[in-house]
Image (cartoon, rainbow, N blue to C red; front, side, top):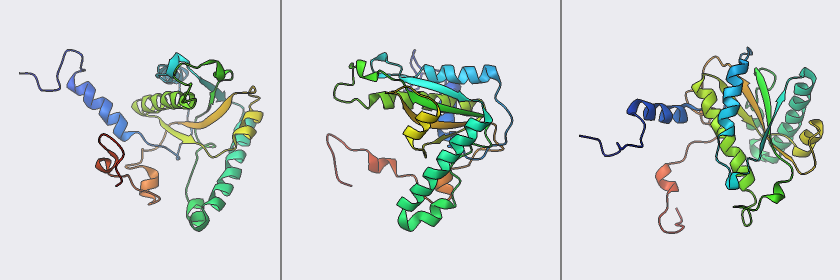
Length: 220
């Protein structure tokens, strides 16, 4: 007899387990061990990203692969500048924040910058009242890439500590485009057993039951 969740459209149980496992074991990695990512593997990861859903099928994502050492160093410096400004904005948690490792730019095998394309104003489908759906779509692509990287045994970290205009100028991006993520990708010695910020006691995962509401907003 079939189990309640078995139907003609579902994957086999082992495949379902693998999907939930990779979601649970995905980590925002900061510690890398150099090495390299094979070209064929990198292409597979980017292809997975490109399969992400996008509002109005606009596919707003663009990927810049940073290969020049001097450019990687310049991006690292931008991140360090913003790291200090972020620490100062945290006031009483400034010192605690400065103790955290927030990026792996110098150590990762591959450095990718994810951008929103220029000319996005032409895409109205699904964005007339929610123009930020271009960002939501690109975030889905990043998540696809993250999960695929974890399945390949590669770590990935999303760095958002940078001034977008400075990074866009550095990368000679066209007017109207927008840099949204610096991604560190590559081999790691091990994956964190829990999210790093949870391990470092910066924050803890919230209880899912407290985040679910029914038929309207309810104060917790």
